[in-house]
Length: 132
Image (cartoon, rainbow, N blue to C red; front, top):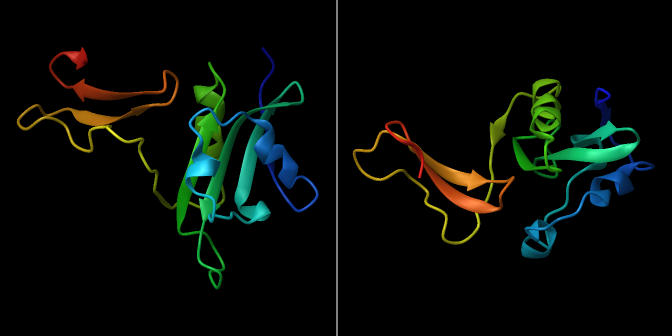
């Protein structure tokens, strides 16, 4: 497998962002959200987009305030991680979880809760028992 090429987008390459499928319907769920092309990055492997990330900020912000979107093709977790690691901005992450996802672990569990983007399902991660 070839190493991914990380690319920051601009007006002429912004179309690459939408070339990765959107199985969770993020764009449809947030129709008014717009990302500046120069605050979008993609990971390409063999010329195909395998991961994408978009940063968001207000209209007067000179730098983004948060990572607002991160998607990846199956098996491309490392490419997505590299998009974040190599970004010129180190900011908060602000993701919307699908309805029904736990926002917090069960009381006293000591684990975490969240969304598994690979399987498209909500998960609770227990520090005692692994995924549940």
